[in-house]
Image (tube, rainbow, N blue to C red; front, side):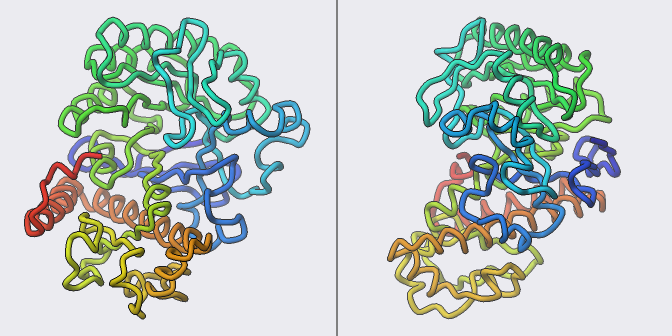
Length: 402
């Protein structure tokens, strides 16, 4: 793995290039990691991955805990790792336990021997040696060390303990590190600025290829998050990539980019798709193709529409006019409305294609703004436009939080 920072905007927001051996073309950052279930996209079959923008869509997140209810680790190793198992030879895999859907950290059950997670198999305690056996068998391009993530409401003592454990496990994982794969050191600390900074400083002294910033999306507020992010990124060397877990909303992504984060694991697309929503915010300065929609029809948030709504039953237009994704080029809102209301799985397939394409386009706008030196202006305009829309609809701006 190679990473180079190409441009800076407002001092901290940065655009770079990530090179992975398995991906033919370089991946521009900031970039999105696509969520998977056992290494495959949640609704889209592997043959449809080619319909996504490339190489933006070629970096996939996988949780090794997904495989605990299926093939054994030894079997995966015998097959040759994740790429051989799922047949995605031109994609890069980023592996870390948390996936924000099914495998969530359980801070109350963690102890000094390992981290605890709620999984489809129940609550599991994962020890560093077991975790590294998974990494050695799966052979991902990059992986994060084991971390003790805690929610925002824990005590200062618990925050300190989580950092101590995470650093200890980092050293154990590095000692057991497989030959292949770039190591991303895990950084935690909950809502404590001091512990966040201490953890980042400690991890920065280790021999790692990048940094995985954990513990976000666990009940911290939008207002306190920027300071926590800056406490971490200010302590890290600039030449190595930073990956974060737990930020999903567009406003949250912008907070991460403003702090200097390069890679984002997000389940935002999954939740939108599952609930029947389609992203519609403009990517080229044009107006959303949803004139005169009441807030409840648009799903309150003016940046997405609820395609289950009856108003779309006879709507013969694409989700977004001018969108180049497979869904918008071939299908209408009325058809997807029908599929959703008769519970056809094709609805989620078409929605995930569109939402992924649209969200990757959003990341493209972010990169352009950074390269043009106007990221902060872009961020403020984006947030202000949503705030104005919410005020016009009579909604509270607190919807900016998750």
